[in-house]
Amino acid sequence: MFTSFPLKSVTIPNRIVMPAMCQYSATEDGYVTNWHRVHYGARAVGGVGLIILEATAVEKRGRLSNHDLGIWDDGHIQGLRELVEIGKEHGTVMGIQIGHGGRKSWGDELVAPSSIAVPNMGTPHALTVTEIKDIVESWRQAARRVREAGFDVLQIHGAHGYLIHEFLSPLSNERGDEYGGSLENRMRFLLEIVEAVKKEWPEDKPLSVRLSAVDYLEGGLTIEDTVQISKVLKSRGVDLMDISSGGLLSARIELGPGYQVSFAEAVKKEAGLPTIAVGLITQAELAQEIIHNGRADFVALGRELLRNPYWVLEAKCEESVWPWQYHRAMPKR
Image 1 (cartoon, helix red, strand yellow):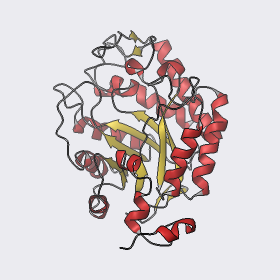
Image 2 (cartoon, rainbow, N blue to C red; image 1 turned 90 degrees about the vertical axis):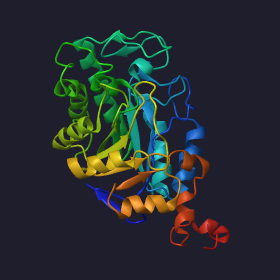
Image 3 (tube, rainbow, N blue to C red; image 1 turned 180 degrees about the horizontal axis):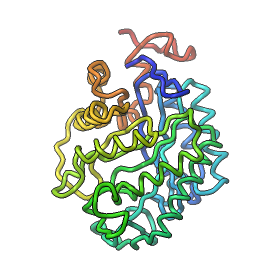
Image 4 (cartoon, one colour; image 1 turned 90 degrees about the horizontal axis):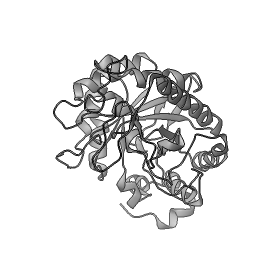
């Protein structure tokens, strides 16, 4: 759990990840605020190996709320660069998740692969092929801004019922063109985004994709689909898979500590890619077991790191990890 992990030119100092979690605290134009500086800075001081900034919108209409961070304009770069500098100053590798909410976006201009609404939300406009190409270009420009801001890991958000996931799942994609039908066609949008992003993203820095492994619904995505998608992503130069689940539509899910770990394990072993496991992981013993037994390469602590930004410090409890300013407060084992 506390060993480093090299990914291309980047060495992540330990296996603990803070996954992307929306803070709903940006300005209405998507700019960084002091909340982000304090929030991410505290987890960097707390020793998290990799911080992945919250879902940051590649288009204004693709925000998940009207106070989400944005990366659709060059003006966003400076604030994001400040967050990178804060993290790096404390030895944390800084990543960012970029995405588009699709039919689950905030606002009236909803877009999706097909005109199928989420319950209690508006009916989205089915994207034309030309519009799809324009959105792919938005991802490319966002990747350029991520590079200019100085991040070391870029993650493409393909999970939780947002635009990429909407293309991947047959439950939300009823297209009859080259973007619909077979799994090969349904993953085309994601692969075009990966190709566009790689034109801007440095070859020596890791590229990650987050996927929902299963939809938990009949006729939806299965773990076998996700393994196949991951194999193709590996062949296209993706370096790290972040494996979550669900989010497309309401579904019955049996929750418990580590309930999604088996999905990350399947992708790691069958697709041959490093993975991040996530899902109600709160105890150091469970995190250690996952890493020690090779079930995943990283463990993401979501809500637990919201509750306790110093989880890593407390788990290791060694002076070499704790900031010298906090040595007087180190707990005894």
